[in-house]
Structures are given as structure tokens and as C-alpha cells.
Image 1 (spheres, one colour):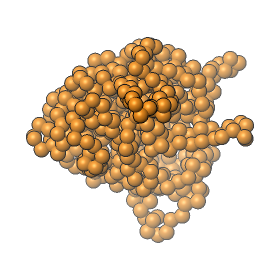
Image 2 (tube, helix red, strand yellow):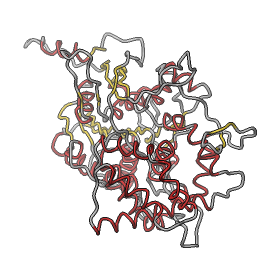
Image 3 (cartoon, helix red, strand yellow):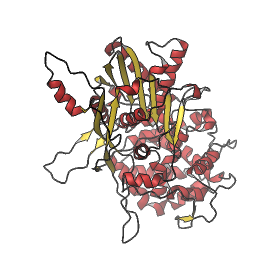
Image 4 (cartoon, one colour):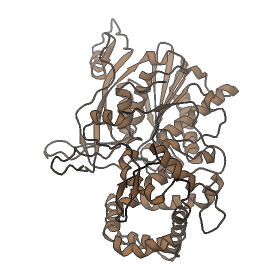
Length: 547
């Protein structure tokens, strides 16, 4: 039951767009380096640069290098699985996230061509910058005398920018604390070379606390409001930064983000392009000097001319569920060019990147009476996309009977379901890690006592979900006064209506609700890994990022 409850999270996240990982104790891995083997005499490491700068004499000035090669760590997003146990032939799960090291190459030359030309090397560097917005959570060392260190996301991205020798690095306050559903954490920096002033914009896409709720705020019209409010915050900060910190040299912009950060970067690129086309851009800038690279990007734009944004590239995986939403029924899109990644051998390549990531290929399953997924003799699904389509087709069907939940349109979603999503995340984000772990254990230990209320959901018996949730939340120390109890009951009823809608209307031709649940259970790690930096780096390492 605990596993089944946890597996519902990808569906909820898919409705909204994306979600962050929750940091856990991590273990370091060996360095897995990317980029080229060849360098020129103008290429130096950031460490060498510092020593070179200190040795400058008053009689001569050493020209600043045009290229930098540097290593940088990132925290993976995949809960790893150890190698198959040789005795049991079963996978052994490790409840941790790994920290990897990648080698990145910065070159001034990346920004000397027109931004409408896709540059795979700039894309790789942009991936590094966007992933650097996440934290590094190091496992406690075995030797107590060794130093253990956690690096916050804003510290990590600042370090990445410093290694590229960007100056006047600015981190907005919401990257550090007090984030809300309408904010966006971001970092800005600039670098002057030749007659060019290059400004980098890195938008946070990992571990963003209450900004998670913004992923679920769509608004009834216009761009997805939770992304759009974040975009406007970045735009305003960028405007002030350019006014205060950037010279009158020829301006170029480099904008990047991952997941939620990618959606905001996509909207920001669209806004700047539109202003340039309309002649109202506040800066002396043209589209050929605006470079936008986004990764694992959900949809948040309501533009019909999405292909006209030739300087925006969205690098996504074919089977990443986050990139499939918001649903097409809500008329939200990505602007620019989608570079869709997939390779038949990608799981093997991922295992070569990290031998501890053991992911089985996608396989359709049925559900047996003992709630264990079983093989299907004649599968109707050829890929995970078929499962996504089946789920969304049923979930977004129009409902006229009030006993069902109708979220077939954006307007209905906002009116009927969005408040409950906000409420649920308000509770969840307020829990400590210990409370979250205890809540999961409660569901696992008390499954038998919940059977009656679980059956009550199937028959739409009043307050069945409420009778499950309230004791569970009270078991981890939450209390409810009369008003709070009424609010919990109200939102529990909405959740129950959603579940009942799925159970009572899962009738698309060829679909099977319990079979699809079994398929989700069996493919949980497969679904997760498609949204991770580990998979993205694997595709870059194997030269699979092409246009």
C-alpha cells in the first residue's frame, strides 16, 4: 500500500509539470568526465587562471583566456539500485542520491555565432549550469576527523559561474529562503570579452520548497500562472542587474534552466523575443544574441507561433512524463525547438554511466489478486507514452455527473482541483523528514485496518479518504481544531472524488485500470529516471543530443 501511495505522486506531478527531489544522504562516486580530450594552449583550468593572474607584472598584461576547462560536481536525481545480488538475483535498493563529477568546457566562441544555430557544446555547458542550481548533500564521512559539507544550491551555482570567470554574481533572496509558489530562485553573472558583455541567467530547477506549489498553479487563461509569476520575477531582476552591473558593450544573454527552471527559462526567452520583435525591449539586444537552452521542460506557454522562436532549444527525453504536460487539452505549449532524446540502448548506456543504476526496460503488466504485477501475454502498450495517454484520456474526460471530478478544462481544474493541490502541499512541505518517513511507515503498518475505507472509496462512501488521512496525520503529531478539521474533510472529499472518477470511469478501449496500476508499479524507476540529470548526461556522453 505504501508503494502504491507513493506511485501516485508521478501522476499528480505530471498534472502540474514537475517536481523537485528531496535531498537525502548521498555518497560520492568516481569522477565521470565529459567533453573533449583535446585542448589548446589558450585553455586553462580555473585554478591555473588564479595563479596566472597573481603573477601579472606591471610591465605587461597577460590576455585573459578565451576558454576554461573545469570539473564540477552535481547531485543526481535518481535513487539508485545496487547491482543484482548474486545469491538472490534480486535488486537491492539504496535510499540515497549520488554525487557525480563532470568536466565542463567554457568558450567565448560559443557566443560568437547566431543563437539560432544549435551548439551542442553550449548545450552541454548549459546543462551543467542549470543542474548546478541544485544542492550537494554529502554523506557523513566514516572517519570523524574528515570534514563533511553540504552545499546549498545558490552556493553551488555561484561556484559554477566563478569557474567560468563570471563577475558580479547575484543570487536573489528567494534562492536562499522565504520562497513561495509565485517566486523563482535565480542567479545572474556577467563576463566581458572583446566588445561583448555576456550575461548568464540560471534559474533554479531543484529543491525549491514552496515553489513546488507554483507548478500546480495554471490559471484559467494565459501562460501557466505558477511559471509566469516566476518568469516575471527573473525578468525584473535581470532588468535591474543589467542597469546596475553591465557596461555599454554589445549585450548577449545566456538563459538556462532544468525542469521548473526550464519552463521559466522558456517563458523568459519568449517574452524577450516578443519584446525585440515589437521594438519595446529595454536593452540594446537582438534575438541572434539571445541564447536559450532548457532541459526536461514542462509546457507553460499559450502561443500559437511556438516554432518562430528559433533561438530557444528545449532538450527533453521522449519518455519523460514531466515534459508531456500540462495536458494538450489545456492548450499549453513549449516555444522554440524541441530536441527529443531517445535511444534503444539508452538503459545500457545509463548503466555504463553508473553501474549502480539498474533499470529494467518498460513492460506492460497486469495486477494479480495479491497486488503483484504480472506479465501480459499480449501487451497493448508499446511504450510508456501509451500509458501516459491512457491515464490522461481517462482523467481529462468531461464529466457531467457531480459525483465525479471534472478537470477536463483549465477552468475546471482551477475551480475543482487546484485548491486541494495547494492544501496538500502546504501540509506536506510543513513536515520534517522524520515525519515524512513516519507517515510512510504508518501506511505500510496499518494497511489491514484501512481496507474498509479503501473499499469505501470504491463505492464512494462518504468520508472514506478523510477516515484514512486524519489518523495518519495525527499519528505523526499533527493536530486539527474544529475549523482545520472541516478543511481537511473538505479536501479529502475532493481527493476521494478524483480517485472515484478514475476507478469508475476507466473505460478507454483497451485500457485496464488495475493493469495500468501494475504497470506503474513495475516501471516506477523507469518513469523516474527519464527526468534525471543522470539520463541527460548519459545522452550527452554518447553523442545522442543532435538536431
